[in-house]
Length: 207
Image 1: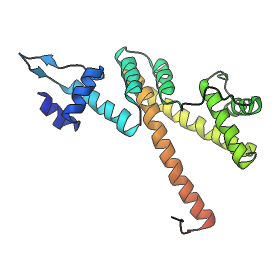
Image 2 (image 1 turned 45 degrees about the vertical axis):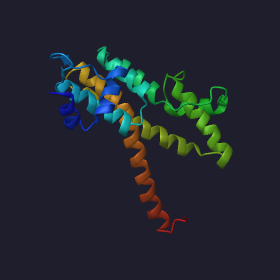
Image 3 (image 1 turned 90 degrees about the horizontal axis):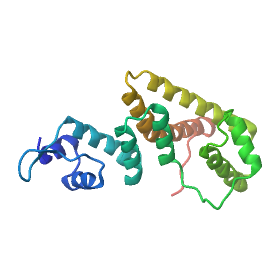
Image 4 (image 1 turned 60 degrees about the horizontal axis):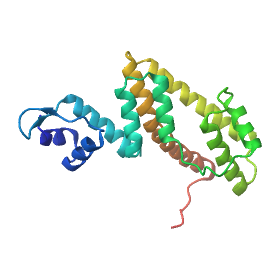
């Protein structure tokens, strides 16, 4: 198909497609004559992936480059998870350090040997900031978060292992990490609204 057809098939504008090609996110089409290139289903699939990462997942161009480069390199699910987690990790103030107490509490709640994982420090810094504003959070609250996270992680891996090929597993690991964060965050918002209404009833929100 011509690039105009690719745009119609993918729902991505021509300027954006050309930008993705310049940035190396989308392979160029196959030469089919002077000033002419042909595109195929693989290009449509890549644009679908890019839309998912960038538009729905909030991943920036640099992050999308890293994820697609990893998938193009044929990495396995473990490496794909590592790349995706690094890409979507919240940028934190590198000059701020978490307290030892919060770091220990997060590591213990996670029940993991991955105490050096960057996410432990990120969560500990967030816990410090939260408790500075609200006072101490209960052990039960943190344990509930850890249980929920473990349940979601198990579901992620179940879904990954249900895929037949390593490339499919890597795609679920990489793209699922970015988009799964959005799904989980949104479901939490819905659950908070439902639980709040159940416990406290409806109320007018000040505007």
